Length: 376
Ligand SMILES: Cc1ncc(C[n+]2csc(CCOP(=O)(O)OP(=O)(O)O)c2C)c(N)n1
Ligand SMILES: [Mg+2]
Image (cartoon, rainbow, N blue to C red; front, side, top):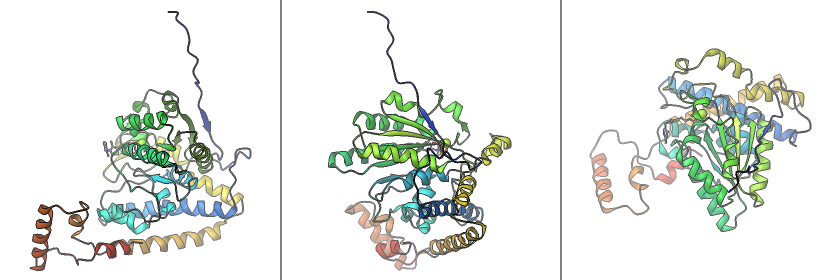
């Protein structure tokens, strides 16, 4: 057998449209109406302010551990913007920007981080999965959903998020490989925020880029500036169009940075320098989009101020709603199985009797349907 070369496609595109100074590449700029630009800016600002409030709530002991998404708003919102309500949205745990854009009630997200699983209930009208913490499990769900869509002849796509650390999991390989082999309508956004808790990106993989992994799987891949919402929209639109028209999955590496703590249980000063964080702060996705929005004449300092006030009121109302939520203490029994097992029925009856006899900590027992309606 001769020893010969096999020619492979060995290049990956990198996409940046709006740079850190707010300068835009006109040739690549996606078509957006002024109304769309306005609501995208509002979406980013809302996610940023929500994140800041959640951190304060955690520090005050009013919610549990919180994982902020500070600095990753564009990498979440851009892809969410590029899909329709009928498409599927499979988030990881740093997608508040995308989830709020999709229409998740903010109070429900607050309940989730407060430890109430009712916060994991997707709104009826959305094809969304809840926040999911097991790293890379989203890839399995996304591939399964995309496979189902294909078998049903449904034209929707599954947009799935994972972190840079998640790409080292077996689940990532299995799901992405499955998506490529079965030519599934799936878009995988890797939020490469440079860290997986304390493990830096360079120790995560020896590959030069994460996007190039797409080539080995036999699918399309692109690296996009994850702090540039225009690049994220353009890259996702292209991938979604391809998936919808039967062209298979795409891997999008969103190059971004986790500006904040991994979670409120973490101290990043122990493993990364302030200079590194500062350098990325200069690439803040919200600041650069703000310049773009002003250049377009869509908002100015004064109208932004009004928007800030409206957002602050919206967040306060959600805090109030989540904190006055009347938990249904029987829910863990009612929703474990579709049909309760005899043992569970017995335990439920015993617990109910205990509460009726004055057992402590019994919250008012509301029907679960009315419980969820409190956080619409
Ligand atoms: C299967 C699994 N293993 C470990 C953890 C604990 N854990 C939570 S987040 C995280 C790091 C994830 O890093 P990355 O995928 O880069 O996402 P990021 O946190 O940076 O958004 C780990 C190890 C987990 N949630 N799930
Ligand atoms: Mg990461």
